[in-house]
Length: 518
Image (cartoon, rainbow, N blue to C red):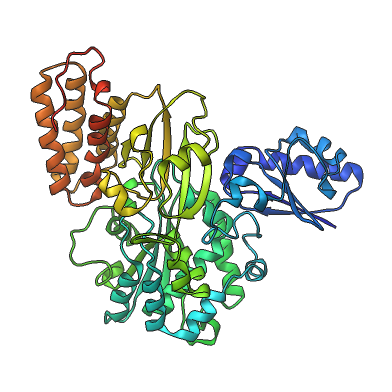
């Protein structure tokens, strides 16, 4: 029986993967073929989806992007033997878009059956947990510290230090909370991993639980991710059946279980303390810190709150060693970074590469420039509160410190391209508009400042007392940066200031304004 692999993640489904599957089944029935169709996650090359692969003696051979109307012709051309066809791209791992990557966290995405513990283990899964159980809590934390792993949700805080704080805290219960409330524009890495390799997240959370002494874990995600929610719940149940969750993990005597909780899609719940409030059944509002969640988090107990990508990186670290992970990257940004290419980009999708690559390599080499074919003008990195970079800054390395020096932030690794039709004054206004809509309302600088920001930019663009309004805008941005309770208000000035700095002409279409204030 020939095995066919076809993604069923949200991106592939949106591009017609289910229609391809139905066409494949119909053609197989008509021709008397018996096929084993395995529905996987995507490998990340969204521009090639739906990507259909067939298992052959030479390895898996891929074809893409495949439409339902292509199936009959593919079968006529010898699809089941890996035959020649205009859509044939050959072995995926040899394709330049995949071959240039360093797949650690996403090594199994697009390859395995997401719901199969057996398939996961056959591809190296649970080797990290086995080693972790043998090492014990302190040694696990030391290994994570050695790796240099930092939070992939945006703040970049060292994961090992956070875990050690929770480990040393005294309490009757401790928790692991996975922040899967992926809300940044142009980001989809969390969703892609939960849909394509959910057991890596389950394993990472279990290792974290053994390290800090937690007995319960929560995956907090958004209602807009129905496919990821179903995939995570299937994976958790499969892990329970295999004895990899429950009262005794791998004979260690340590009990741990995981539950998926679904939020209503509030952007502010991506902030860890708002997320904890929501988990407790309250309105998602930012908590004042201290106390830190590592000391007093969910239900007042010590809690390790980590992003999906941070937790999913841990199995590889434990299986291969912290030192091996630290060999990748640059400076203090060690390991690999899953980058999501979106917006007006010719080759959109997810790539995983070591920290330190230039923005230019992403835009030109991986992304292939703009989808429209028009000249590139700007790229926003780090979500809706990230900076806009012009062509002159494309050689900036992708690491936490270099991005900060350039006036930006790496965030969750979202990279959104714009061609020369973009209006950066409108984009700057949108930053304030977004903040006004998504603010939890707890602090005045964010709640009021965002609304005032929209008004001030409207006056500047209209040419109303520009010098005075630039001064007001500068003062407003400084107040929001320094006085907001969390990053929602504190980072809103980042896209605004970058647009003013690098694209001042967009605030003066009629040539009426003085040079913007520094």
